[in-house]
Image (cartoon, rainbow over all chains, first blue to last red; front, side, top):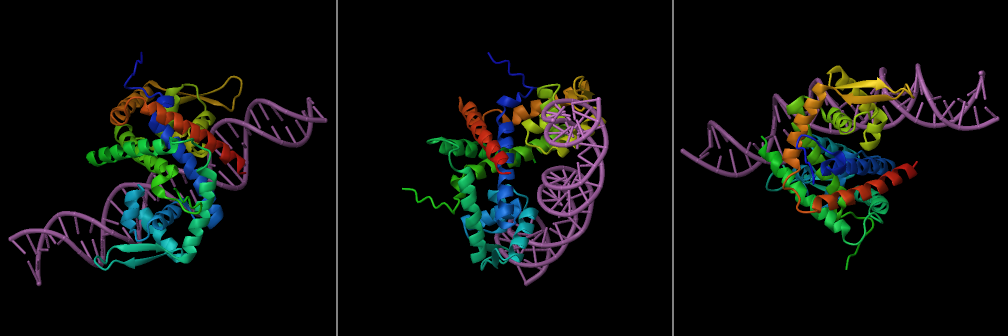
Length: 153
Length: 153
DNA sequence: ATGCGTTAGTTGTAATCGCAACAAATAATC
DNA sequence: GATTATTTGTTGCGATTACAACTAACGCAT
């Protein structure tokens, strides 16, 4: 039935294309919300959200859970510290690692933005268990993507 | 059962987070393939793929189907023309619109990259109808994202 | 404990992105 | 059919990204 020409990509049936389009829409929306509510850029927001989600995470942890370059995380951490939204504490066991936490101000900023994002993105978009299903599939693909990335070099 | 604190985002259950992570992985992989196989960057590849997918598309068409900024599309088009991978022809009815097509060289480059991407990404990642399901859900969300984006200003 | 490889985080710098401001062509309104 | 508003595409320029090279701290050998 399906010709399946291996040297052609039919965009409308190509999940990576749709995934990228969706993520671009999400990022743009997030950026506008985060900028308006807290004056942050996306990198700074990602770090703040990762730290608020699980206090004590290090820059390397953040780099791992979001596929951000470590230099971007580093600069985002610096600016968040400068603006007093998070603080860093060197670990007892390993002085290189900087344990990150939100400050009260950072926590407040986080909650304001999180509420707004939950409000605009989390509701009415999917029905029933679709959200769970979506996350399950995305995780499945992501883990395979990570393995091919590490293979290739 | 679920507390559902509206001012907190539990990353692991937040589909926008997972969507962005997946798309980043896809983009990085695509970038490395496209760069290695054809010496293009992602923007140039996106434009080439959009044009190969449906010849005759204009820059505005490309801007619409990928949420790329029109300036990025414009520059990608210029460089693709400079390197002889696509060509532009002003439309009869509207001289502003530039109908885009691949050249034989561009078509060849496209097919090489497409084959490689199909090879590395399209297989063994999902089972049965999961891919169709995934695309259906993503499209559903994307269309709602587009509508909230246009609302907000 | 000295040396060697690895890991955490930083900084330099070039490429890329994206907003705003623009010119040219078309559409709409009168 | 002249004027105004929209749309298509380009360019200027500051902000962001990402690759490389680097320093500092750790792990692990011998």
